[in-house]
Length: 96
Image 1 (cartoon, rainbow, N blue to C red):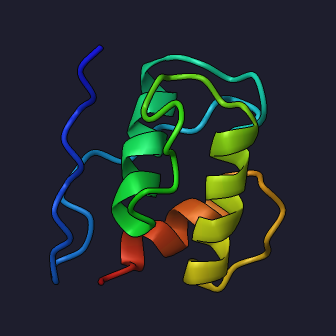
Image 2: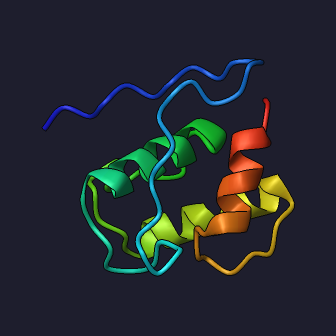
């Protein structure tokens, strides 16, 4: 299995596509699919190496939840493990 390349950090902010949140308003454990892959690619950009075991596999398990919490610490938002509106808004404004 070949892993997707990790995006290079840029001063302009995240160069990839941001995920569309599920109808409940946030991502949580056991969510899966292409939007989760977008989320994981963002997490890898903001926190390189945060998904060492499973990478961008499209499933939210404990590794991705931990990466979301690390990301929330970096973004300065509530650290709850749920990637929702406030986290997404902070992510879109974040520049490395």
